[in-house]
Amino acid sequence: MDQQTMQALRDAMSSGMRVATGCTEPVAIAFAGATAYAQTSGEIRRIILRASANIIKNAFVVGIPGTEFTGPKYAVAIGAVCGDPARELELLENLDPALVARAAALVAAGDVELDRAECEAKLYIEVELKTDADTVLVRVIGSHTHVDSIVKNGETVYQNSCRAEGEDHGCAPAYHLSDVYEFCTAAPLEEFALVRQAIELNSAIAREGLAGDYGLRVGRTLREDVAAGASANDTTNYAMSLAAAASDARMAGVDLPVMSNSGSGNQGIAATLPVVAVWERVDGKDEERLLRACALSNLITIYIKSKFGVLSALCGAVVASTGVASAVVWLRGGGLPEIACAISNVLGNVAGMLCDGAKASCALKISTCTNAAMLAATLAMRRLRVASNEGIVELRPEDSIDNFALLGNEGSDELDKLILDMIIHKKDQT
Image (cartoon, rainbow, N blue to C red; front, side, top):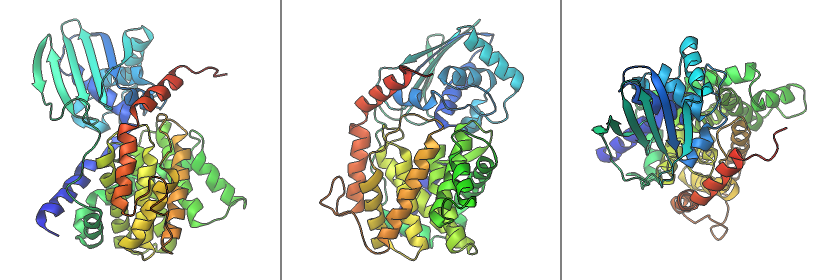
């Protein structure tokens, strides 16, 4: 592999795998609020948050770490009052309860306003913050911590528009699936420090999810069902329970960091923990194989998301389960031909799963996609695959991924609007 491709893969891993505390959309809102307040002095008088449909739906009901609160208004207020923007995706860790109470008081007093931004960008956050002394406008566009501009008292004091508004649909990466495979299976182990950290962090929150009473209790219930003899104590159920338990805890707002993937903590969980579970059952001793398998899963997830875009109306757990299926194939002795089959099998099965916001039931979707990944790998090891004349699947896995990305990019806009309207205007919540 040439050095340029090697560096592109290193860059993809370092930008795609980042530590985050809490669901990344509320964190991004909090980051924008913190960035705005850092430019001001005096007491906060009013905060106006304008965000894209994708941001609002993913922040609407998910727990904010270390607090009892949910929703975009609380996220932006807590970020403004409590957050240090230098901590980026970790700024909601170890919040001061007294400051959280001050932020909540702003929301209770009606001093925080939420509007949907009419824009093309899927990831768009605009915070207008007014204090006794200043008015600051901050825009975050394209990625969760990319500050596009800061306007203070009518004067632009910062501008970093590296992409045009609306161009967050993804683009072709500077490497191929075969490069990902070669890098993950042959590169020196020191390349995978982030992968090691992902295993440690995501395993810790999974243990918390299994021990506690969080959300739908998907992971813990699966584990209890196995213990009761109602379900098989097999690798698939073990993988499903581990991944779901981590999401149970994270969506409930547990104050533990995770290693995210492509801007999503749930994707980082879903791309890593099923692979850990399979390794524990089929090997359990060779740590090098674990690191390489988790690297393969995470980098394939990053590869797909680079084409797919950061946010979409389609569920990111599908993307992560494609990486998982590929890594499970490798752990079971398969190579690129079997991985191609596995990718076809995942995308031919669960590609249409909707993203209807970040919430407790994300753990259910992660368990479903983990199951799909395991079945896809089992078929792939026998060279069985969804045929290239069926649905969105093509002969080459890269072309199937391109079709999936096209659905996520071009097919999402109207779906996102419909989904958000359904989320906001519930008919009956009794």
